[in-house]
Amino acid sequence: MRWFTYPKRSPFSPLSQWLRAQSQAFKSRIKSTPLSLRLSVVLIALLGTVLVHPAQAFLAQITPTAPQLGDTITVTMQSDAGGSTAPQVRFGAKNYPAFSMGANRYRTLLPTTPLDKPGPFTVQVDKAGESRAFKLNLKKRWFPTQSIWLPPGKDSNADEYEFDQVDAFKTIVSPQKFWNGPFRKPNNGPVTTVYGVRRYYNGVFAKDYFHRGVDYAGAYGSAIVAPADGRVALVGREAKRFKVHGNCVGLDHGQGVESIYLHLSRIDVKEGDFVKAGQVIGALGGTGAVTGPHLHWGLFVFGKSVDPTPWRNQGFN
Image (cartoon, rainbow, N blue to C red; front, top):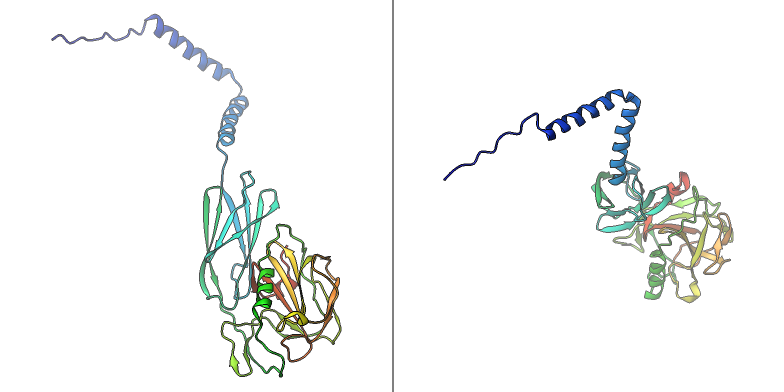
């Protein structure tokens, strides 16, 4: 068998000479090109790479950084990628929708209650195939205990109709945000019972119960006003099986935020009405399961009762 050995290409072959000439000509053109132009060519090449492969990263900010039981947690997200897909936020065992704030910014609100377990928790944000996990700590909060003795005829047990109506109201998630800035005080009376109080009713401790709102002891018949813009989504009447809530009004403020006003003596709105902040919606009374005239104001975020106080003090824009 004969092994064939291919001769090395001569550096003086016509092809080699042409390649060397082209290389020298290119080097000469580069050397004669101004430095600023050479840098511009490099920059354009880099920008072209970014445009072909756009970054998908996003940022997220969570406030407050040290939440306590009953707080509403705000998750604000900023994406540097286009597209109409909103982020998904997971908190506990539930997914929460995020709503656009314009310019690739999104926001969602997360509710906590006195029945939640304090300690470390995770908020996970998913956007365009990327995921971020944020570790926070939910702080304990002390809530007082109160004993309530209901007079005869003021039954604290609602029937299924009343529960069903209120539960359906709390599940409303309208895409539009109606409120703007801090909420107003719904009545001019003093606060008599704060959010989160645990109770005994007629000597029996109400398990898994906490006071889901703030009570105002205004004068009987005094005005109840809408603390923020919203749509009337619930009107309940004591004469129509609302034995616990009494005459009540529920407002949908948009994006999973609802407020409710209980024990009214008079209702001045109807379902479907759109009310403005400060508009009178009824009058303080003593209907339903109460020991005396007062207003109960409750606030819900995605169906869970949160403390209304921060919504009045600093607001959630």
